[in-house]
Image 1 (cartoon, rainbow, N blue to C red):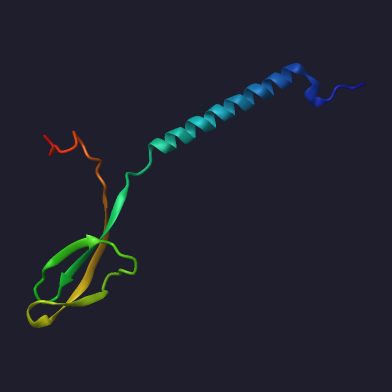
Image 2 (image 1 turned 180 degrees about the horizontal axis):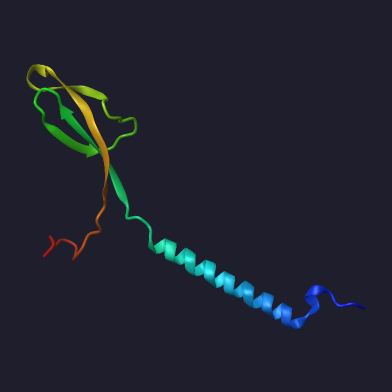
Length: 103
């Protein structure tokens, strides 16, 4: 009875070692990618008053877009509140003990 290609014990051992090596390589690559994750970010909307130039930063709300009119502002409501910018900031992890202010 002729031997098949995978009946050779040396070839079987080689394929087994190759499989284990590839598994370890893939595991190491994915664990390194997990370490490279970007820090969490928070999205903010910058609102400005067209008459006074006063600016206010608030958390982004769904539906915000640059140029959106949000209402009136200023003395006698002669100005408009306009979304000037939408941007993100990195959320920095708290350091130190709870209740301390960066000593």
